[in-house]
Length: 309
Image (cartoon, rainbow, N blue to C red; front, side, top):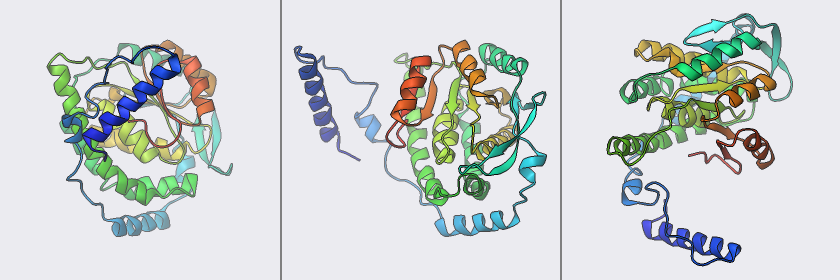
């Protein structure tokens, strides 16, 4: 982690570079919300160490017991308020290498309409931190082997063990950042946009980026999340949504906070168009990010690594 002085120096260099590129005077002295402040720096340090050996052993056991038919008999489908919408036609899913690995029911137009209605009308309380962090502990503890194993089955080459090891550390930092964000809202310094967060999943780092950073951190502050299906490798993120919703129920969390939209790209685009105030969170190439941002200006994209924080 860079020191506050180094961060300030880097920002000054960026400001001067921006000023030079514009041919204007000095850039205004401006800092985004509390970045590089002492409060920001205080969120780092004192982080847990995951038991990597146990994660590996538990994942191997999970894979040894996995039934490949499970992803056929329990198809990917749209989930709204914990309920399955299953009017869509059944088709097959594929893994990262185009190999068939399960079934999916892409939502009908009427089912996508139901997702849109829910997203436009849903209201809930603004602070679910206690319940969601209890859910998170179970997801990255009891269910860690399933998260890693499902990703390995669907994507084949991602190091899911290291991903979980990094997640348990990064998540604690980001929980602390969220604590400060909610306190700032309480103090009238910021207003959190609670339009639904649209989560466009990445194929190879979904357990951290999509489950933790884009979904859990939003829903714990009362921002609903809509998780979008993928054209490939959609099985493993649907499975973490299922696990998440089950643990949310166990903690008494409003099921309307998490929606899974299993639908084709044109219907996903229609969903985005219906929610112009929502942020789309996507991890992708610069080219894809540019196309998505053209369609939906409120897009936050990571285009060079796992940095959608």
